[in-house]
Length: 223
Image 1 (cartoon, rainbow, N blue to C red):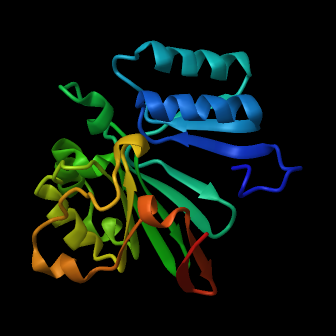
Image 2 (tube, rainbow, N blue to C red; image 1 turned 180 degrees about the horizontal axis):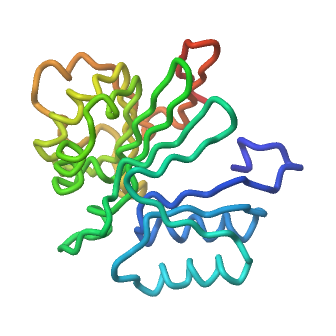
């Protein structure tokens, strides 16, 4: 954020915790302590651990408005941008990997651009199956799809179906853990040949990627 925002801007309208993994929370705790934040959004947790409990306590101590969202929530950002919450469903799923299965899956919609943020949900068969069975496939369509990949861990087969519904022009891949991701390594993309022709950018290799949308057209830049 220090590299993206001017030095005088020390406030944020909202912070979103997309998945309650410990490393995500620790990173956002630093943001909460360094910036004035109007609102914090997450999907909630069935069985909170000590790090998540600290997260919620810090929010309360700083009197930050806290909002739990789930499937069907729409958040307006100004006049022309909306943030659609596609996952998790309510009630939250109780299972062996609740952190991954109940992570937020979002779609940013603005004139000329739709961005589907699968995040860690791209690795959850439960979340992907839930999307396909509960969301009209037209609401999955997006020009850009972002997802987290883990080295050596293949994506579930259901991702093929979600990508087919999304029909993206660009895939953005971000690593699950920076310190263990090695140059030249990657997780396995779906094997359907139709997806091999979609341009794919990896932040591990290219650094920060910026998507610009203006007057109904969009492009990506690396910073």
